Length: 169
Image (tube, rainbow, N blue to C red; front, side, top):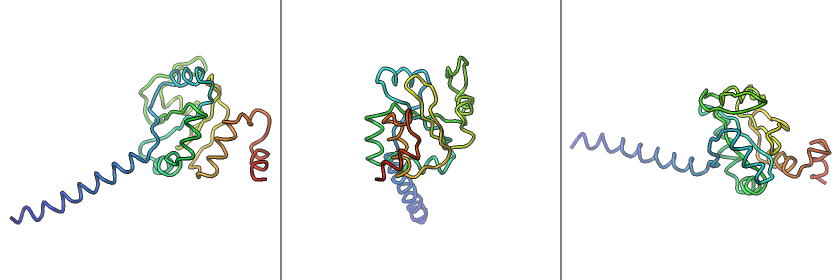
């Protein structure tokens, strides 16, 4: 009987951990890891720019962006309508990606796209040509402005500063 009493708190902790884990996973944006070639192929077929989230599994700010930015309904809706998006684990050497005429591992591709740290958000044209990259955690309001700037094509003829000023008027 004594072992049951000790066992019960352990079971309770396990159930709580599972419940919290499921909630966290549910809140995250579903962005399957794919090769850059697959992402570019899909973006070209859909005529959409690319958003590539470069992350590391151990990174608390990457996790926070998943939970507070990518899980937001307005962000998700805009991304679904306007972008082809994917995640790239910068810490893995697995995977094979074609970029600038070279075959790169996921880690090498992250570095080639300017991800010196994680998270890094990379915006690309549908053909895989880089537009810009933004290192670090990005709060939801700024992230929405950034994806609207790129998604609307405004980056082609005005600065982000001018876009933000016009958007706030």
